[in-house]
Image (cartoon, rainbow, N blue to C red; front, side):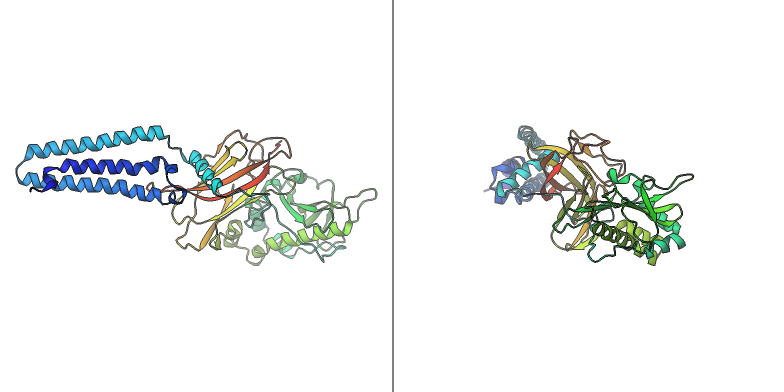
Amino acid sequence: MKNILITRPLVWHRVCCITALLGCLPLLWPRMLPRSWRTDAPDIAGALVMGSFVLSFALIILTSITMLLRLRNLRTLGQLLIWMMQWSITAGVFCVLAYFADVPDITQASTAAAADVQEEIEDVVSLPTDELTGPDALCIPIYPEGGATDTIHPLTNLETLENEHSDILRAYIEASPRWFLYTGDSTFYTKPGHVVMPSPASGGIPGLVHVAFHRLVGGDRLPSGYSVVKPGDPMPATPAGSEQVPDLAVELRPGHYLLLAWRGTSHAETAHRALNAALATVDNIVKPLAESPTEQTLRQMLTGKRELETEEPSLLLSEPPSQFGAYQAEAYINPGEPGTCILRIVDLTSNTSLRLFSFPAQFSKNSRVLLRHDIPGSIPPNLLTASFGYEPGLLPEKAPLFAIRRGASHQTFPVAFELWFVPSDASNNERLLIRRCFMVQACEGS
């Protein structure tokens, strides 16, 4: 009996073509498989398709060499043409199947994957009250228990920097996303993009301290509506007929102030403790720069701690108090390879996309290390971010905040934050890293 690989080689190629097409089916229609198989199915199907083609290619090379050695040149040429025609037909059939399968792109695929997740577990909708730790975070909690109420808290580190290294302090303020925006606006507390320090409420009215640096330029006047004081001065008394303690302009040096505005209970002692706690917090923030006033320290302060040693990726969302509809997020992830992150915000009510952000992924070969990504801080200005119904201009330019959509103040709606990773290596599939649901609100804008 003659060798079947030589007498009937085209049958084997036909089997390889059919096997490759069958391997494509789970890629085109992933829902045809049980849920427990869907995670590994793309890798197995891809290996099956590649294996079928490699086997067929090896057979055609083997049989062609065998026939050439027997001087069957025309038959060899015919066999090669038929082999190419078989795989061309296979590729054509695949294209037709892919057309009817209507394979979604990344923005649509995330909806399908999210639907699979929702079939498995019920979404838990959280409030955007996570505490961010990066240097862009605008919400910085304070704990004023036991603080002084009669004198202004000393600002040792700030005064040292202002008197001895004013250039590097100024460089820090102008480069820091949390401080640079309102250095010339004494009404900063009415606008989004400034630092807010909430004081915990102990059974009463919660309070906030709004904080900003303010520098006079040229013939500018002292901020109106503020009590100008210096560190160590007596705490100014509440004016007669007023329920609110006065806003403070703490002079660091002539022409440079730290502005603080308390908004909360009219109880003077509570307000004074919170104001002093805010002063101590700001002074502690610049302490590394006062101890080592170098460019390296400045870069470290602006970058913050990027690495977190843990195995659980997380996505944190914060809405700075009083800045309604404006958000900041931090993602702690490590995809382990280069690629791009895509953050998709989906309206859970209508299942429609609201915003889409993309930014380069940081990664490490150490799987126990997660890397901090600031949103919007990690988004390069030259990368396109898609929006669906979102109107630009809701927030100040370069503010470390993003809005989800325009709407009436306090108009809330549930959304899903889906963080996808798209590898630079095209042979690897994109994957969903994190999905969290939040109750957010629209941004009224200016």
